[in-house]
Image (cartoon, rainbow, N blue to C red; front, side, top):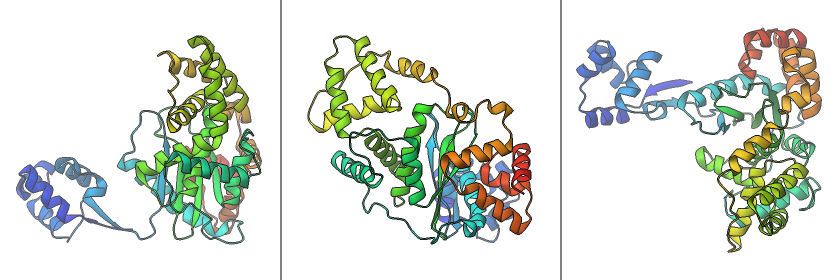
Length: 375
């Protein structure tokens, strides 16, 4: 990938800030000649100087650098609450995508072609309900049925999206899931962090399925659509209407919460999803929204804490987990070709554990254990 400075943006930012080449050179501790070469496209700043230049000019990496990469990996994140996607998050995910290119030829799909996608994805309520019912019909479910994990997993498989189950912990990370689309091979890779609450996990899977169906969207627009699609798919209008009416008839806040809890346990989805979809139904039909006391979100947190993370439910004590069991259990549970694909690549190329670490973003010791098991 070739990179060059966006000279137009840089010079405009210099003018706006009243900075000369000499001032930049002094601040970044480089020669004036070096700055001149940058601004005349004769050289490119080293990474640390590029970072400081961006901060000095108040430009993001995307604003400061022009990347000549026609088939750059397209990434999207299911972010942790309160986090913000930054340049280095995108760079890291794109770098993972570049390594995934090496695995694409080893996938077991008969054809590597663009799967069916939505022509004009949007967050309009009626449109979302129509799409949700179509997807439910495709996986042989009625509007009244509860979606199971296996329904979502097999839909990913039908769309030739490769699930990559990972153990990324439950804190200190930006993402809970990462979606990577490689335009050159037209392959989709979906990383799902298993270290999350089991009720939230189904929503995140549906969210990622929304990304698979809307590759034309990007940024916050893509995230908004994927969230809206996930809610409509897991809890469509018929369910939302029934929940709305049941909750509305409860006489106290505590009774409303207990009603919400019963539905969440039955559907195995977050109470928040039910609450949000019931109010989407109300808004679309000109009805008053459901109101709870300010304690609702604290109760939802407590409700989630009463259940195991998916990793514990699926794999047991992860601190005692070995590579063989991890590969076997997750490959079977998610019906994913990822591990077999990685195994074939490693045996054909004789590559080391570094490639395993690069495509899974796991600690090196864990990558070495997985490499030994796959080879």
